[in-house]
Length: 147
Length: 147
Image 1 (cartoon, rainbow over the protein chains, first blue to last red):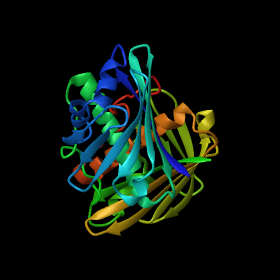
Image 2: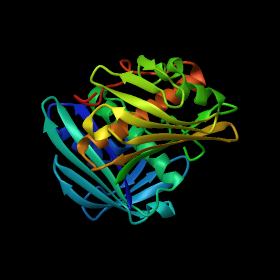
Image 3: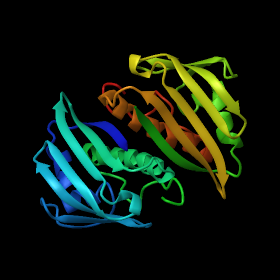
Image 4: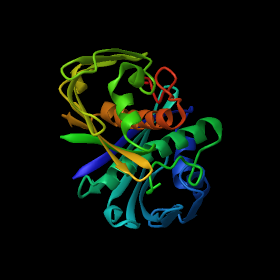
């Protein structure tokens, strides 16, 4: 098993805005992909669509301003059944976001690609919260034919 | 053991420019950190310095336009003894870069941070080769007190 792990500090006085950006359709559409729909409550399914493909995530856990967890229920074969979790905590001027995308069966090239893309979208989340402006798909920078 | 894995496609007709950016002091200084010194030949040591800390890398392997491998010989405790390798190949209009930072003993928070930073520096390498302009430290975007 191999994991994608990331960490980013977002300059904001409380985790509130970050939590909102991870749990509302409007927030998610502002840093990950414009084409976000669905239900962000526990047990609901969020549908993320990109110029190439997309993902459906079941919301597994929500702890306000602390933790968000999803399970992938549809999307590329390698993603199905994997889990994505976000842990938030405040450290001085920063909300620290710990990100894990776990349950990959093999470190295939597509996983390497997704690791890089997650980082760029975390930078988009940071920018959204700090400046009001993210860079969600399709305004992200493509890094290969997988986008 | 946990690894940092990334993949980026760089629009350029051959891997030549990417290989140069990974193996010359001038190239490395143009996407990773302004303060790069040392000897890029096999057996040489490259010294990378940042506003916070730095790394010394022994060059372990060089295969022109195909592969670069480093071993960390000085730097943060978690990095010492880890290895970083870069595999390049041409796929149509893109040079595909497969990046691996291996040998981490534990998935500590600092590793999560480094995973995110590597991705942003890979985007800087991409930008350097595609546009002539990278974003090396100290012109990178800090993502926490670790920078």
